Image (cartoon, rainbow, N blue to C red):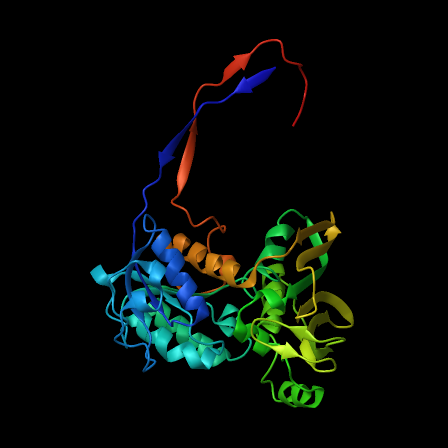
Length: 365
């Protein structure tokens, strides 16, 4: 038997909340471009950046693809109609973005941020996290930190896969990023052109490397209900074996060309979570993989990996799309509705199937 189903799209009710972008760095500019391309879903109401060389300028001079006759504002306006969504893309530090996040909540915005430490803020500063949660609840708004990593590849994605298991014993996540394909700030962040001594000095001061790996361990443990007793973190430089040239750097042999960052979550002496991240100019090909041991085992691999910059922007917009009825307060990305594409939502309505005779019977898909 073979059946052909005629599908008629049925639009779900969806309110186009106005959005603003706060911070016009590389991620903020990309968010602005993509928001402008999805004007059936988002209504770009403003762009904010206090930088002296940006505030007051026409948005089109910075992001030509935006196609909006807007000027870059030094401060965020009140949400039009009392409610809106703000994309906050200014810094990695929880302390750095906290005052801006609180202001945006007071102005009526739900806040979606790429701030890595906001992905699991109770780890770095529980008191500040509690303060932000109170501010969000008082404003009856949602505040969430997300992105590709943290926010998906090494925390929410494994948790989604774990939904297919009756029990989980261990989580192993490996992410390899070919940094040659990424923006200049990321190549700088992984130490391109540095000497080993300089890298190790900055690493000892916590001023280099990937922000968010330990947050991902905490996020996973929280989602799986595990009480970890210790998290061990190591950060090592990758040294160029030959000269490496990119659009932004010229790395001679023997200099730093990337990082190898690991975090292990232990429950007593038992290794529960292992996250392994390589971000380097000599890492190719990129890939993302998850291995979950339990009942049953689950493994997933993405050849080529999730593109860090573009996927981060997609995760931010996907989170905003799910702000139709978001939970109130400071939330984890895994506490929002199931991630979905950022296009306008469509529900397909099945009509009566058409049955074609003469097909084989008993075949299962």
